[in-house]
Image (spheres, rainbow, N blue to C red):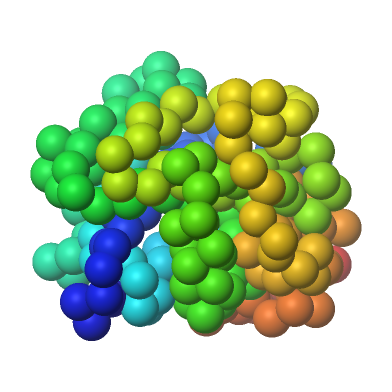
Length: 218
């Protein structure tokens, strides 16, 4: 977390931990395995965000009970309102604005298992130069992070073609290396292999080891 540097950032992380999570990771995985992987991805994303020097609070928006064991006074877990991804993000943004209205607000998708805290710090430093900014995913069509500097309103437009949608809404793309873990979201087995090559966090490593021990994933 931040050492008091100004401005401070609150990071919102939407997490889908139900059996509907990560359906594109392969039909050979059970609903439970996919949910387990999704939660592991989220835990690694949250851990990296919490360790970033520019981040002072993390807000996790998820289904009740999914991450109830998170024990950190700087992490607030709130219940997903059940209105889809962008609805969950808006709910988290409102909580950030109500609790810490002088902070910048960033939204990180919860499927960035190769995220490193220094990559996030670099992106947030760049984001200070723009009222609104975004980080495209590794393919360049999706979005892995959006930000609003203090005093700017943030409207999420996640979904197919979200990079162009955020750009059209006034977000400036940040100059983040395509090989950064901040850009490698994971929806497919190919993307998972790329994330592993970058180096995934401890929660994802443990989840994958458990699943592979029963030969349920290559």
